[in-house]
Image (tube, rainbow, N blue to C red):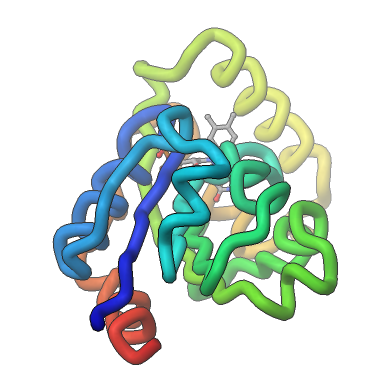
Length: 174
Ligand SMILES: Cc1cc2nc3c(=O)[nH]c(=O)nc-3n(C[C@H](O)[C@H](O)[C@H](O)COP(=O)(O)O)c2cc1C
């Protein structure tokens, strides 16, 4: 019998939602926003895939799956930073206990941003982040910092459907 797969996600500006749709469609999985999910629903699935946008070191809505035991948990994050040059260990350690970490498979995907569409609170947060980076001497700025500054106040979209392939292959192999 084939595995029953759930894709649940939390997306503020749409990037995570688009990835979640692509993943659910590739895996023939059920797709729900995190708000529509409860413990009873989670327990019905053999594989739970959770996607959340990255917001200042947090994974949007991830408590849904960190507070509830799930069989075969896979978490994907969607952020502005380039996954090839980003260290996610601080984000992951902040949100996952060592026990849960050992049972969770992570994938990191790249989204986008349109500063014009940000909420007032998010605009302020991004301005603060820019200020913090600019305070660092140039020699101490990480690649992620430089990337942040180069896209600040613009509209960029790095969504790439092909980047779901390794996750889809992993889940098909379970
Ligand atoms: C206030 C704020 C904080 C953010 N923090 C991060 C971050 O820590 N790391 C990152 O890679 N992207 C960060 N981003 C970018 C978002 O993760 C990116 O726009 C993503 O595509 C959002 O996904 P969503 O549209 O599904 O919510 C931040 C964006 C905002 C507005």
